[in-house]
Length: 339
Image (cartoon, rainbow, N blue to C red):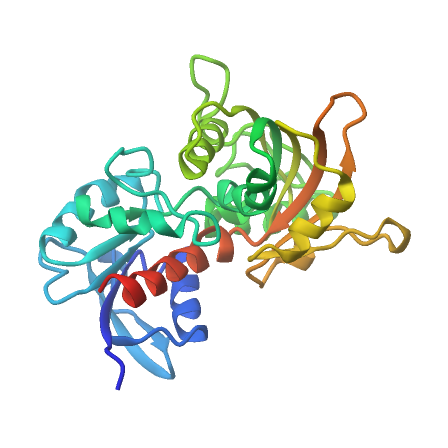
């Protein structure tokens, strides 16, 4: 009989936490004891897992005794506080927040791209899950980067409201209903109306004029691809879509990659589905990406304004591959090779 592992899910009642539970069940992860942890207001609630109700417990410093793997999706502050506590208790933490991503001693992992980095968990007992948009981007870039190193990237993201949590999903739904019935709407989650609108701001602005979300794309991509020389500029936009992030990517490589070759590379790449048939109007869309774990890539064409450059369009489910599935995939490699 294969070994079972005791798993804690921190932030179990949130959108990503619940998705983690679904993915653990879907992929038949070898869970022994499952410990669901959340804030005090969820203490005593129940969530079904494999057909059985599991009680949610309040997160505290004693929550990790006997836990082998702790999946964190409860925000940066809780991860910064509780990941070291969990690691000290013997758990390996896989953290979905931004708290540990740029720590030099913490591996930042996308299994299709740099699975070997998982071995670095021994430094602090922590593995970082990248930003949802970064994950989709590097999955698509990996086969191209291996063919000819990426020199420069221009990335624009079009991100669904589910990236901001359930309150943002509810806000978009309510705003659409109000506006379609001729009534004014309120904005509480976002600084402006999101329904029938696009907001070129995700997270707060820095002194350089870029938002923190945009700088995550820059810094995390370099770390995952292990190449600090890549020049990257990004614009992150929140759009009135419930699930699924899309990205427009202009990638310049050291040597030219013909479009036909790029299609071959992407069609064969793990984690990628090529959706690129202009004659049939087939291209990646968030409604097609939602509910699955592949990164859809299409609209592949040569950049006629720049030598050695291609344009791509991609879409991926931000809650699944962009968060929960990536974390569980890391856990699968962890238990197969390191535990």
